[in-house]
Amino acid sequence: MTFDNNAAMGYTAIAMEQLGYEMIEIQRVINRMYGVFDRVSVDEAKNHYNTSDY
Image (spheres, rainbow, N blue to C red):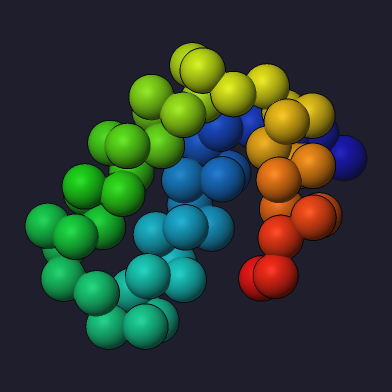
């Protein structure tokens, strides 16, 4: 299975929509994610999630 940034954006948007976030809030998160994709490796992001309390 391959996973790309657009899939991550889609999952994020769907989750936020289901939680009732406004479009402007979703756009702000998506825009921030573009910057995170540029600065954080896949392994760093995976490790952050795996060691978090989420």
